Length: 87
Image (tube, rainbow, N blue to C red; front, side):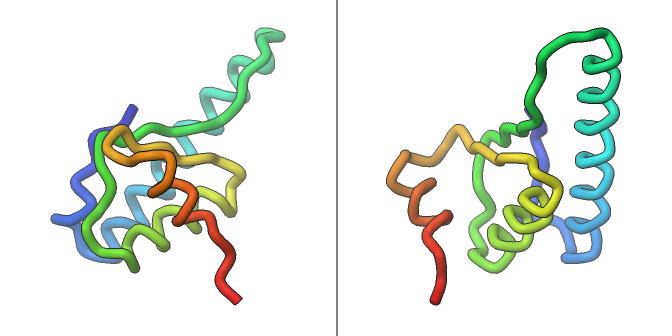
């Protein structure tokens, strides 16, 4: 679980923070795979950012790396709405 204050960061700080977190997650996953353990990537945040564009940025960057994101303050309906494709 990471307690990132997305609403207080600049866009460039968000990108830096996410890249750092992605590296941490994959470093951990790789260490566990070397130890012959079954693991899956994922990250949990306590709450979602208020700005929808920031939410999409965060979701997109993690998604590009195959890392699902879950937040404790969202309902299943809210989570599903984020994942709905935009046509």
